[in-house]
Amino acid sequence: MEIKLRPYQFSDVDDFREWPCDDQVIRTSRLSSYTSREDALDYLKEVAIPHPWYRAICLEDHPIGFICVKPGSDYEICRGQINYALGSKYWNKGITTVAVKLVISSVFEEFPDMERLEGVVNAEIKASQRVLEKAGFRKEVSVNELKMDKFNRLEKFYNSVLF
Ligand SMILES: CC(C)(COP(=O)(O)OP(=O)(O)OC[C@H]1O[C@@H](n2cnc3c(N)ncnc32)[C@H](O)[C@@H]1OP(=O)(O)O)[C@@H](O)C(=O)NCCC(=O)NCCS
Image 1 (cartoon, protein in one colour):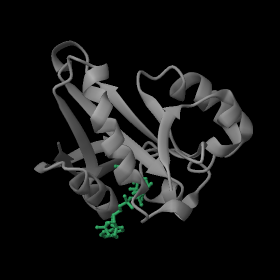
Image 2: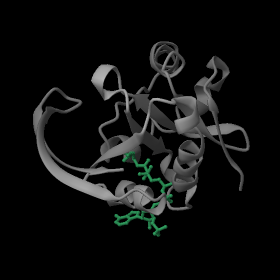
Image 3: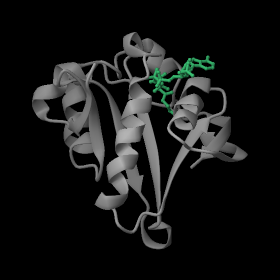
Image 4: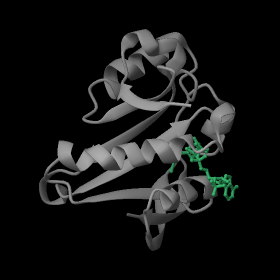
């Protein structure tokens, strides 16, 4: 099973919907769903393709999830934040852990100002914490935060920061 990362293209639109149309992914994360083909194309055009570092996690060159790194700016230029999701039929096969390790092997070269890569995970999403632990991240702090959730409701998040 060969896992590769590459930028999304518009021709990926049908494969791209693997995660945003997956109820299990949306239910267990803060990600939003994009159920129509048109919404998916807009997301690729406005978010994924112009993003500084947003990659498709590919199995046999078909995207089955995404992984992205948001580099910090100004005084946070030395920090980056990692995020990811995978279609639920591929869960628990070690795929995201491989993808995170691939990111680590290249992202510091691509962003020479970045010294630290952080994952901020909802403490209740054990699989996501485990992915980061397996890739070598260490838990630094747990914080309670009040934030608007994806439905614009104020919600308390218990986050763990790993780096
Ligand atoms: C989080 C996510 C990306 C993990 O992807 P994945 O490819 O299944 O991850 P891996 O297979 O590399 O590793 C998963 C690990 O979590 C463990 N795990 C899964 N569910 C678990 C649970 N409920 N409690 C504890 N551990 C759990 C697995 O056993 C595995 O660990 P192991 O190899 O030690 O057995 C995937 O579940 C997902 O897309 N979830 C929805 C989106 C999301 O939460 N994104 C993260 C935002 S912070």
